[in-house]
Every structure is written in structure tokens, then in C-alpha cells.
Image: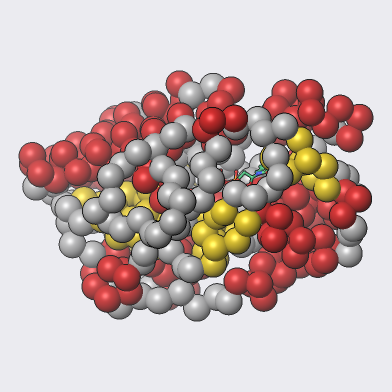
Length: 343
Ligand code: NAD
Ligand code: TYD
């Protein structure tokens, strides 16, 4: 297999490349990443010099770049992780989300078709289903995204669906739950809070922190994506979820315990997502379990505590990111009005 992995200088893509190198050592890997604020060479330093890995800077929506790599590297498969991925940023600016999450997916699909690739896996999210009060989403639930981010991901998913129906392009979709684990850019709930708690700073909980997310360890997500790459059927959608539903405050309590901090560091702020704050995510992964012969193996609480320790042990990595003006500028702009002196 000769795989183009896009967005692999980010959180999940880098974990996926590491998994491939360990579990499928014969695979040749080309990485295409635009190195946006969320993509960092420091995240892939550990395997960049592997003889099986080649790194190409560039955007997935650039057909010349994509086609050049497919030809030069004789690519047979694509796994697309590249995306603008943060809901809160999509409230400030969403044009780049459309460019990457919709137009970029379209470019990859056209290239997959024209170059006769064997398979393209498009990595998507449970957020395209919207929010659910009771019960679980399945792969046949309607697509009802509520935020500019989830709407752009849904746009990419619909491109995959249409390309497969129209041209028989051998593409499929995986939809993951909220991921946690090592190498996550420190703007998402868990790494943002852990890195602030380590420094004794207050953590901003939106509203009462009663929203429910379904958490999956990043390596379980990656084994699910690998199973879809190897055994998934083109045209299908596979939910890759674990059943770890937790209210945000339940997660925060574990983070406080593991960092040895108290409730005095929790600051409830007016919800910046307003109407776009999905109350609950929950999906059934029965199809992936039965058809892909896949199952998650990381127990939630134990693995979350191990994740906290990883951030504590790898401060050089995230401090280089949080020290940057692009990180601090976003934090000031987004949280400044509500955190004030606690910024
Ligand atoms: P991330 O933000 O950590 O990484 C995204 C990567 O994509 C970065 O390396 C960035 O440089 C790169 N990138 C952005 N725009 C690009 C472009 N136009 N061309 C090439 N590269 C580009 O994201 P993540 O958390 O690793 O998520 C990866 C994928 O998984 C995304 O598609 C996301 O929607 C999906 N997903 C994420 C979660 C989660 O909890 N993080 C859950 C389910 C699905
Ligand atoms: P996040 O990690 O951004 O993932 P998503 O929006 O994809 O679910 O947020 C997870 C939950 O945590 C979500 O309900 C919003 C909440 N949250 C906070 O309360 N404070 C924060 O500073 C952040 C980043 C998130």
C-alpha cells in the first residue's frame, strides 16, 4: 500500500501515521499538510526521517500539488485528515473551513477518480448529525449540522457521497466521536484545560458545563480508520465511537484531580457558542464493530489520566505552541472579554 495521508502534521493524522509505521511497516506514506496554525513539524519530528515517510507541504485544495504527489509517489490510497477543525474558530471566521473541508475534499475525490486509486477514506465527525437529546445517531440518521465547522464537514461528506454515486469513486466516510490523547493542539477542551491547569491558570467552562460529549481515545479512532481503509466498502459510512458519554464538568473534575488543582480554578463563562452549542453527541458504532471487525480498547478514565500525564511530561512540545503569537492572539480574541484578568 502507498498511502497519501493528508493533515498528518495535526493531532489525529500524526497518531495515524505512527500507527501505520508500527502496525503496517511495509506501507509507504506520503504526508501532505499545509502547516496551518494547527499543523506543526514538531508533531511529526519523531517519524519524519523514517525511510517510509515523505513530507510535502501544500494544500489539499490545490489539484497540481495533489496530482503531483499521486504520480511521483505512485499512491494507491488516500486518508484525508486535513481540515479546519475547531468549532470556536469557525465562529470567528469560516471561509477557510469551506476552502479546506469542502473544496479540498472535492479536489481529493477528483484526483482519486482520475488516477484510478484503490480507495479514499474521508475522516469526518459525529458533529455532522447535529445534537441528540436521547438515543444514538446511526449512519442513516439525517445530516443536520449546527455550526459553521460541522456544516463544512457535512459539505465534504456530501461531496464524497455524490462522487461515489455519480462516478463510482471508491471513497468512504468515517465519523469519529470527540478524540482525546497525545499531540492534540492545545485549543480543544482537554489539552487547553490541562495545559492551563498545569500553569495554575483558570479554565473557562461554557455555561454550566452540562453538555455531553462521547469521547474516544485517538488510537482507538485510528485503528477504526485503518480497519475502514483495509476492509471498508466504498460508498459506506462508518461511525467510529466509544460509549464514553460524559458531561463536560465530569471531564473537568478528572482533569482537576489528575493535575492536583481545585475547583477554584474553574471559571464559568457565558456560553460563547450561543445557539450553536450542541447539547449532546452520541452515536452507535455497531456497524464498524460488526462489519469492520473493530473494537476500541482504551478504558476512558484511566486513558484520560494517562493523557494528562502525557501533557505534563511533554511540556516542551506544547509550550512552543502556546508561546506563539497566533495561539495567544486567538485566546485573547476569543476568551479576552470573558476571562479578563484571568486570561
Ligand atoms: P487538527 O486541527 O489537529 O489537524 C488538522 C491538520 O490539517 C493540521 O496539520 C493542518 O495543518 C492541516 N490542514 C489544514 N488545512 C489544510 C489544507 N487546506 N491542506 C492541507 N492540510 C491542511 O485536526 P484533528 O483534530 O487531527 O482532526 C483531523 C480530522 O479528524 C479532521 O478532519 C476532523 O474534522 C476530524 N475529526 C476530529 C475529531 C476530534 O475530536 N479532534 C473528531 C472526529 C473527527
Ligand atoms: P471542543 O474540545 O472544542 O470539541 P467540540 O466542540 O468538537 O465538542 O469542546 C468540547 C466541549 O467543551 C464543548 O461542549 C465545548 C466545551 N468547552 C468549554 O466549556 N470551554 C472551552 O474552553 C472549550 C475549548 C470547550
